[in-house]
Image (cartoon, rainbow, N blue to C red; front, side):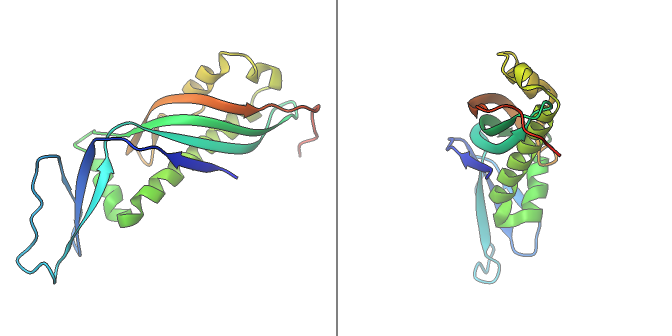
Amino acid sequence: DEGVEPEAAEARLEGAVEQDSAPRLKFPGEYLTPGLLPSLRPVRVLAVNTSPVELDVTVDHLFTMDGHNIERCTVRVTVQLSDRDRYAAMAGLAAEHGTDLEAYLLQRVETDVAMGMHAAVKMNRLADLRRPTVQQELAEQWLPRTFANGALVRRDFDVREIAWPKEGPISVP
């Protein structure tokens, strides 16, 4: 199974979501004011973290070019919201996903990292993957620099744990 574990960070950006209207981003220090009839048109607020966040992604069953099975690899990816155009990508995603925004972003990071790891391992022999310089090579060549259509930017990448194969190569279809 593949999984993502978010860790907390401090700075926040508030996105105000009114029913039947596009989300508006509110920055720290700005006020959020309800309408004249708040019971008819309530304002929902979704707090969004703008600080870097570390996510641990575990990917199982990575097969090398020479037929070895790396049972499990856990990587830590540090991502941050892209502040390009004052978080315009985030406003679009908030409009599309609403309160499911966090789950969507986590899933995109998990999927993109897993795809990159599978591709990187598949294109290398086990001996090449055991070299110490592979982590940087994987980060520069195989993992995306952005996620979720540019809403998240990868700031760092670190291989945390690898379950190296104990047996010889297996036949991979």
